[in-house]
Image (cartoon, rainbow, N blue to C red):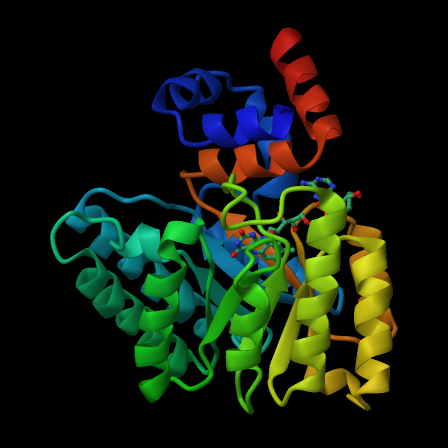
Length: 308
Ligand code: FAD
């Protein structure tokens, strides 16, 4: 119930205006977001890299309804990638991109515009010597995102995609994408989805996550295990061992601010541990999804609002 309400609120302009009005929320937001400027994103990247972790940076934004804003987001990524190259961080830091932030939902030629903007970002990543992963949004975008990814992969074969274990279709998508050179981030899924397309309860989603992991770990691609769940992390390690994968053939990923000690433990054990690091002014939707994942986060947030 609470999760559904928060996920619905994450797309409500009214709630957004209300939440963004409270300056103290920024202290809470800081736990999950590096800052609202590019230099803050780069500084946080440097700190993470110096601690032995890799990074994937997200210039925050989604659901763009304006072509100029979509082009502006692509430009922001180009600046980010130039900064990563100039600071020598590109070897350890890539970028994650939401296609809805670069035009996918525009009423006219949305997919075409998103493809072209994503192509610019991929080219900038190639010039910097790093990679891009396309985030996955709600299920209405899955086919479109995978089809744009397929086109981009013709020129940028290292492009990564995300699959969400809660979607009933995902085990089959894992089979399609478990081929050599294919970078697939497997996560549980963060959006409110109908039962017709997605498993609903935690137990069913966890079982689906394990099925997806089995396919990806047995395949020829490069699985990116995105979860904070101790059980999923343990099972991923066991499956890697059973499939005789060495530590360079897959990686773990977690969100900035969540289970940092576990991030360090995995990195110190010799694994590749990549932190998803968001920065930028458009933090609202991302932040609300993090609240929805853990009721304790909502309690901290409400306490901060009450004591402002
Ligand atoms: P859960 O069962 O939700 O959590 C397991 C444990 O992790 C919890 O008990 C708690 O201890 C801890 N935890 C989890 N979430 C939080 C939190 N917010 N605050 C504090 N503790 C927490 N989803 C998409 O739909 N599309 C994407 O493209 C996408 N990209 C992602 C990239 C990365 C690197 C990661 C880590 C997640 C991404 N997600 C994405 C989000 C993902 O789908 C889940 O919503 C999120 O990771 C929570 O699921 P979990 O596997 O951690 O397990």
